[in-house]
Image (cartoon, rainbow, N blue to C red):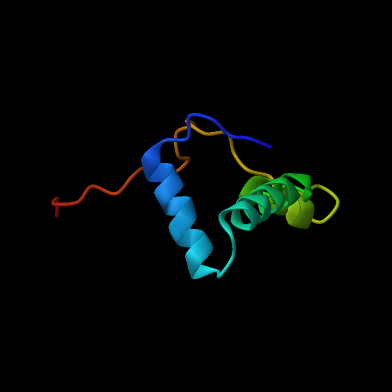
Length: 83
């Protein structure tokens, strides 16, 4: 495989990374491609909403009788500052 028009900064970073891992430039590129593709093949991570639904979904919870939002309270609100 031949990669053309690789900018100098990217080539330098790849070369430094290869040296850090004591690999050839070619082996470092292979490893980066292998790792990137393996990450794509793994099952995507669950997000918070998916986890909450799985743990606390309808089959795991209770029904609560909540009043609709925006409804006026049944008792008068306290008046602060009055005696």
